[in-house]
Length: 289
Length: 331
Image (cartoon, rainbow over all chains, first blue to last red; front, side, top):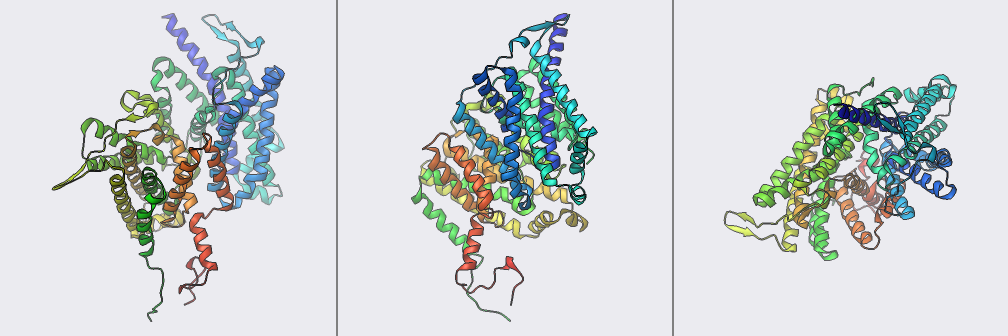
């Protein structure tokens, strides 16, 4: 049955594309988790904010490319301010309070999105160059999806180079491993936290921008994506980029294949996969601890 | 030497609680007052985890919802006795907590929090998808409130005031049981785990088993609260199992004060009052909720209990010496 083969292949591709976006969100979350020791409950809200800023910039300038470049940068700056001004005073109080603060921020951002842009959803079109499909022999595939795949791979590669090949990256990895030691070596760990939070938020916002033409915009999109981000991190292991990519792809592909054959069960299957992996490997796929 | 000093006895909070149970329906609508005590059960059950065992579960709505739907379905389709519905709901909450706890307690700290949250969403999606059974987003309507038949009397709990008394009674009993648990040697093991899990383990306690026990107990009481909630409104809204409810439970417990057994009850009263007052005026009331939450995190961390303690430190001493938390007794 060539039709079935084509359908499965298309769904597999869709899964990989969405999986890369999950990986971007997950890497951001795992960076923040590793550095600041908090599961950032505002991560979904930052993802949604990225998408809505794209919408705003599209309305203002008409250019998707400007939105793609600027929206994540705005979120990057805003979240660094947030960390510096409001989260930092809470570090001595304990990580539970930082966590609850990010929860409150997520509620506030979501409500502000509804106040500013309204409770109704929007759809965003990809730029005209990326509209339409490419013939891939057996089937044709949307150009924009391929673009998302390439951008995600490029961003993750750049991030990997930053973390593995630069001095800043080495400090950041050291910060995830042992903050006291980094601090003892005369490095300002708080500046590291601010940067790490900003970088994580940037990735979330970028994921939101990339996802906007695929799934459209809804005020609750941040809430809806948050469990996926958490699952990616729980499966991938703390501060582990490779783990986050693997977990993101597994979840993306599982979701998109089950959507094809058993639409009601797609979300449940993902959590079942998560439960199964946790039963076999409680430390996550690649986690050492 | 026995000192005869007038002091707040261990019964004082219970007396105050009794007064609050009697006075509250005069201060707000009966339905809202009933809701307060249902959420007070939830907050107490959650504080068994956060305040006593040191487990921040961000998925308490899972067990609340499990209880609400179980009791709702049994009452609608089987017309069971309300007490049977309550027992079944507690059982359902406990069972779901056993499964979720088994998986989540394998990971500690932050992962534990994230996983309880993820399972909460999983439960939500299951209820959302199984709309032929649960009613999906529209909720499960038509939950009856049959009379409580005991051998020779039938207590009609359909009138609002009667149901308020019924809920108050269940709440009071739950609070007594939970207080008994936290003051027992078992409760001390929970607190030992909160203070230093490694040391508790070194003393020979199977900390995983104790954490699971706390988790399951908390789930059972949350399930019980769920049943009461469904019977209160005659419907089980999907919100009962939504993650925001989990956040609300954390919030009300925190604002009441996790450092005391009774603090979360004050938090529940305040939260339901705030929600009822603001939500009728402005649809975007969660924004206010978020801002109040931030305020609490920055300026009000000890909750109402802490305010009470500070007041007592400032006010003339009523016979009692130095507050024990601030240092060893000067006796």
